[in-house]
Length: 284
Image 1 (cartoon, rainbow, N blue to C red):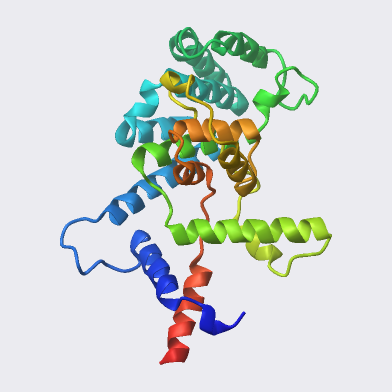
Image 2: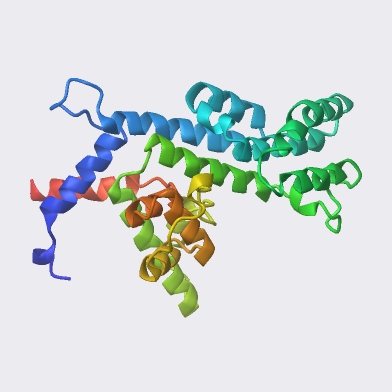
């Protein structure tokens, strides 16, 4: 591509916006805390919550929710999923003390929450009780999915999606654009059966699966149908199922751009800041 066709001013603006959002540079034009600083703070909190849930430390995540996002604990649908995961994690530890704690969690938190979380919650509650009977290493058990560690990543992704929307803690447009381009690159080389020259980079910058879409508020389940073009565009852009794309659009009230932000996967792109720095070094 001819470099004369590159809009360097637009690219610079994207980079500067990214740098401000990541608190890499200060906004000298504003004396008060900027929106980007708030977004950066919230994204750090979301990252801490994600890491806690992925490590199986549900109590630490709940404590962070209580301090920074109490609305999560007020939503019984989300609270039930957290308590169910906490119950599994306590059993996973395997000690007699943790087993007693799991029983206490069952009685005081999980069972009451199952009564009004959502229609299927009580059936899920009865099903997860089988974890008392079947060992976590039994891959043929009816609760093998509950024991699977991927459940940690699923609930971490779901909570991250919900938090991003409610806290408006989105990554800069530059980050999301690069994620989209890298995703296309990854799929193209995979379908060609060729090893990507940046395969190591894609492994470090992209998660294996996109976050689960945030569940729409109950009052929005009767939302009118969306444009099929928007549904398909979102589904293909972030590799969601059609239903996942619809749920994301419902949560975003039909805003396609916001729906894309809800399910995007966070990643680090300091490598591209180096390229930007090198460009200016060459110009000087």
